[in-house]
Image (cartoon, rainbow, N blue to C red; front, top):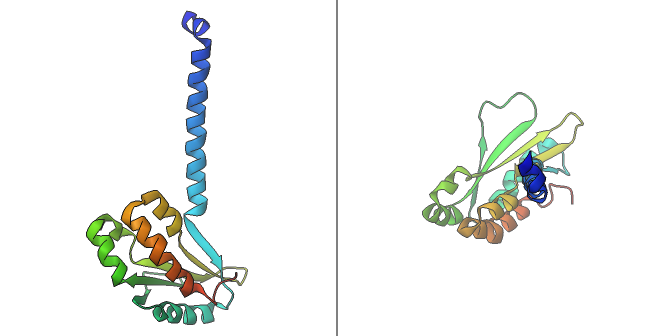
Length: 156
């Protein structure tokens, strides 16, 4: 008790520091949970989007697209894997652990409201956190090309 009485400022500083760190951490976790996956409303029907998306992606030079079938539930959902050898090779050479993020995946699905949505990892945010060469390659090269792939099939 004497310690607290003598060092009231120090105790309050410690408590304030603790709560500041705790709130910042909690805010960061909540932000990442809400922002790590991008869900984009589509402007076309589900069927048309599933038809157009691989066509758009294949039209961007160097990209390959394949449909992923991984025990998907019945209903309207399709998952596509996108890969570009011209970007994968330098990424995996310098940072092989980035292999867990590539190929890039995009899910196209229809919700109960009848609208079509596209979902993908928010690589812009993730690469800011990772930084280095992967961050630069994604920011300068991959993200602009992914935006081209989405032209005409997502709401602006």
